[in-house]
Image 1 (cartoon, helix red, strand yellow):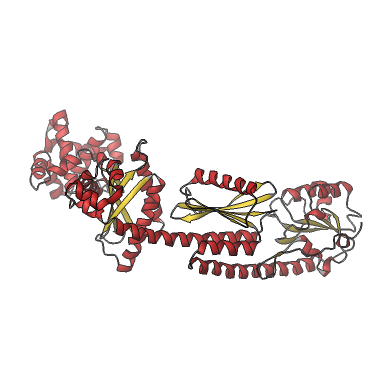
Image 2 (cartoon, one colour):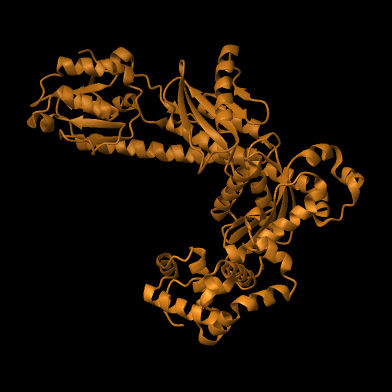
Amino acid sequence: MDDQRAMNGWTTAATTGSEGHELEFTVLDALTRPLFAGAEVAAGAGGLNRPIRWVHVLESADFESLIHGEEMILTTGVGFTANGMSPVAFLEQLIRKNAACLCLEIGHYFQAAPEEMVRLAEAHHFPLILFPHTVRFVDITLDLHSLIINRHHLMLQELEGTSREFYRLSLTSQGTSKILQLLQQSTQTELVYYPLQGKPVLLPALPQEEQELYLTYMGGLAEEHEPAARSGEPVQVIREFPGRKAVIKPVGALDQTWAYLMMLSPGRPREYDCLLLDSASLSIAQELLRTRYMEERKCFSENGWVDDLLAGRVQGENQMKALVGPDFQHLNETPYRVCTLELRSRFQDKWNAAETEWETARFHLPLLLRSLFEKYAFQPLMTMKNNRIAILAFDLKAKLPSKHRLQQALNSLLHTAAGDKLKEYTLVIGVSKPQTGLRNAMAASREARQALELHPCSQKSVLFYEDLGVFQLLMSLNDGSTLQTFIRSYLGPLIDHDESKGSELLLTLRVFLDHDGSKQIAARKLFIVRQSLYYRLEKITELLGEDFMEPENRISIQVALRAYQFLHPEKFTIPQTRSSQL
């Protein structure tokens, strides 16, 4: 066969970086090495631009787990011929595993490449390279591995330098535009930047028909996923267009996507280009995040009236109109809830955050809140004091059930904060009933605070006022004596016994009644054997009387238990290790 190097000229058209260095090592590059001087390309010359990640000597018919893809395979054929495997089957398996090429030594085991093997390699543009004489595979692996490692090191150096430049540009005026220009120059690809709010950017300018194709696709992608990446770090998506392969990268932070960046290339996207795309999208996200921090500061200054409204310091509709401004009519007619968030240290019972830590939380948490509330179709207006944030959450989709969406937003907030800059703190949230009309904001704020204050009783991180049940009534009766008198009337003997004997009769009675008098469930929930539960119930009956389970008495006792829990939530904690002592 004619020497394919002469036929193709073997001109190195290698992948280069911004400094002109060859960054991706291909089959074509390998063929220019001195050790390949006598090699011939028997078939698959159309695939000489395939990248080589590693070189592997393979003399086995069973290699499913031995290669990962993009390896140059060196073989004499001794392994698969000895096992009875046909050369075509061996080649088919390599193609399926996405090997880079096959180098076959002509000699004792092969006098020439079988025609079927040649046809298969040609059909798949899979380079089949023949060594017409014996070669030292160890010399080839040493030579090529050194080149691959050196180029990989060079790629990392250039990537680091370009990434630093991306970051520097993100700190300048019109940073996103400058980052996109540098990315396009470095990759020599076509770029489409599609912000969810703003005008798309295409570099370089594309024909109108192509623009419409790509922008229509990006618009559909934005509509499908907007406004947020559902979870975790945004990942790349690869899609094929006519004559193009596209790599699409979401750009965003705080569990929200703000833009999409698409890189188009004629063939398979290079690893180096994909890494640059990652770096550029991160720098753009950082610039967008800084912009949103500044917008958040502006929103706080513009919405300073929120604290006065929630505290009841705004008198009359005219004063409200003057403070709220042109948005008054819209906000006054939109349903809303008030959410009160409290940030608590995980390591201290009392808030005592360092000033720098609190300043970080002071601007990071509202930004995170706004992102998540807008994701679930709420317009948040916030005010912050000490370690609490009060939010007027206006429902932008009032025709749809709001409680579930708000619960989702708050759950996402808890999940994100747990693994974010706020991981040293615990968030506790109280939510008011739905309201309409800004004149009701103070009452809604009071409901949110009351729900928040019941966290020790419920141990729930998010508590809606409408879910408080009898606690709504108990809070209004907590005047210092009414509840105490009621509790003593129905639970006095049990309270005295628990305090004098160190027993847990109150807890036992609450768990027993909460599970409709089921002794089996109550014993399991209390982590005690049934005999211990029976003994406790006998003691409760002795102290409260035989009729304590009669309907009227039972209702009063259950309310008294809730009232006692409201005043002394620590008394109703179930230890995991316990004795049956009364």
